[in-house]
View 1: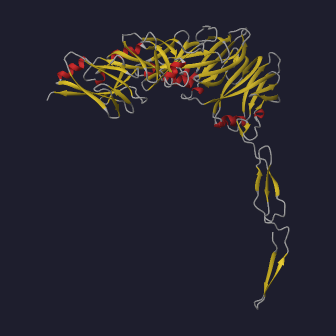
View 2 (view 1 turned 180 degrees about the vertical axis):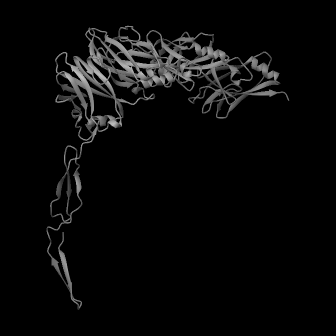
View 3 (view 1 turned 90 degrees about the vertical axis):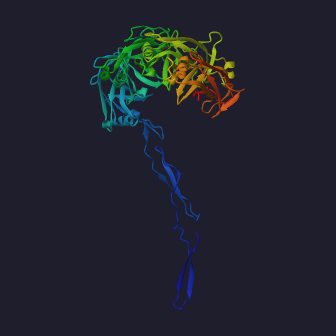
Length: 598
């Protein structure tokens, strides 16, 4: 801070100046600067200063911000408002671990979800609320929601909500018969998203049964985990779950006739099961697989599945179960995804997925042990009949490893087993018979550590299943070029005047045949010879001895040889190929030029 100055001037031109004393109170303050930001649970601080440096800075408080709640929890301070979400008359209410505990006498209950709760559930995308009331030994009734009858231990209602409910309280009317005079019950609210056939987590709802209500806790890896009232080996319990009507309607539109249901124990538990759709009790930590028929009525009503489970081992408890569901769509030739059904010999399941001409099977043993042993898959008899009707005479079938996995197979090689990984496959030709399904049985085992290392894996090769490839073989015909070539060790696909092969090993003698009927048709058309060209697949390299001492074929490079045709004689081609170092190599490409005499 500096002194000021006054100035005056005479008309004659003279001027006079004098100093002005410093005004200690005339500060030039800076803008306010935030020192500590305000939070929802604490005031903030801001300051300003004068450039003179002769006065201390000034500070002032910044008012607290408002709480910002998400799912009932403040994102700033962690404050939990969910204790205020529930109101039941003048009853005392506590909240802990996602449960409200209502202390009250028995009788009619108006369980009110406050508008803040409804808004939070809507913001989270919920379209259905599963409201569960529970008390051991008590019975409940939802007086304005189905079911009307009493249910032991707990009861649950599924309530649809929409934007029309925003900023409004939601009342669930219930009746509580306090059988054990505990004077309290718990309330749990689980949110359900809108149904979507692409999102299986929206397919199931909990339901009521004699032992009380069940809730869907989670969905992961095609498995639903549900929790019911805790039971033990002496009491057991009857429970249920519900498949949504929208799901059943979608499956019926897809041609489904039944639904496969697999019940299992929760992780770390061991239960026995029976089901309302099977009536079979299965003991131990194994799954109960059953099937329920679908009806048109279920497209509007849904499907309730009742079940009984109990602890299998003495002095243990079980508090729920797992569920897997899948539609049963009768196999048809037009729907390739329906062609194959996988099996695990003994106890187990195999889930089939079809993508781009390949069936991928994920297998699992019920006892959760490592995959090893007999496996099988079946091609449906209806598909076989359709193939025969279309002129298919046989199938060339391949078995291989899933991408990034490896295993050893005993199918065509019955001695040591074939190591299958990367693009290596086992192939076999199967004959078709009318009204007869084709079942392929083979043995699989994991690769050892040394076998995995030799195959290029950093650790023991993963092994969760296998893949299937199917080539339909027709009676050879000149008019159908896809039938010209055959091989017992390769699969051929025909497109754009070229045949592309895939095979089982990285090196060896290759052999294929130009069919006799095709040769005769060519001769009848005046063709006397064919020029066959061998090349690499796009982006790959092979070393070929078809017409040289071992030329490297890559890009547009090819090997060519001309062969004379002989009546009633198939043309057999044999040559050797191998990989060129570590360059990619999964097969080769064949083209055929027909030559006539000049």
